[in-house]
Length: 299
Ligand code: ATR
Image 1: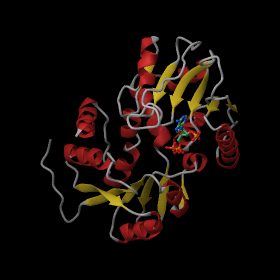
Image 2: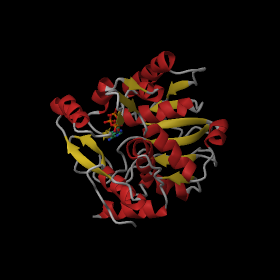
Image 3: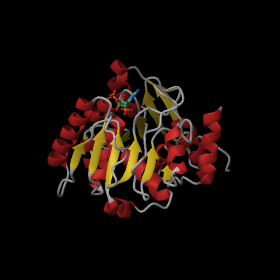
Image 4: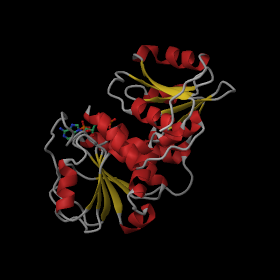
């Protein structure tokens, strides 16, 4: 690793959140900066909701290149951006802000990109998975919406199931409307499935994604795993939870001989577009990056 250096010309970025102390983004970006020998720094920016706009304008005034945005600011980031990409419009949120030299703020949603990139990094062909069946999303929150938007863009039929059925229906309606308003091309099929439906995983599902906090250490039910009976033998099972790395869901999938993908890859890959935009270098998610972030997670 090269010697870290922050000169008077350093490029600056950070992560706006409330709270932000748990964020792994500073660890990750500063690791890449050091490794690539980039003159730059990435800092945590704890900002209360009523100070978000003031903070963003202040960062712009101070010459920051931009920022990541995490809970609870993703909708406010969407609102403050002068331009947002179509994926952010369908996702309804922004997690990456880039401050242009012209004073304009460009917003994007990279969570869905990060999710798909994490599958591709494991050698999974997205098109082949799509051609084999639908994607079944567990959960109907912000993460589900971002992932659904990315899957729809890649032509997946998407089925949403959620403990609170009205939220699943609302998500499908919101996605349909957003697709009609902002996306190009024919809209893929969107539907809902009851949370407590008895038959396990429908055989025509080729990708199952847990976007809830179930299975997360310290979450609502750390031992949760759904019934995988009936699943096709080519089913890919993905979890966005990354603490623990191998959730009960992923263990159950592996025990059935299914491909199981954890949530850490999504977290690492979603950071790449911002890093490129702010620091002008290409960040790689390789074994050394994963090992470094895992060590930080354990601290
Ligand atoms: P995010 O924006 O990170 O996705 P969120 O909007 O709070 O977070 O969504 C959390 C998801 O986890 C929701 O789908 C939630 O289901 P409800 O809409 O019914 O609340 C789901 N979830 C949380 N705790 C759960 C539990 N104990 N059982 C089932 N689903 C749960």
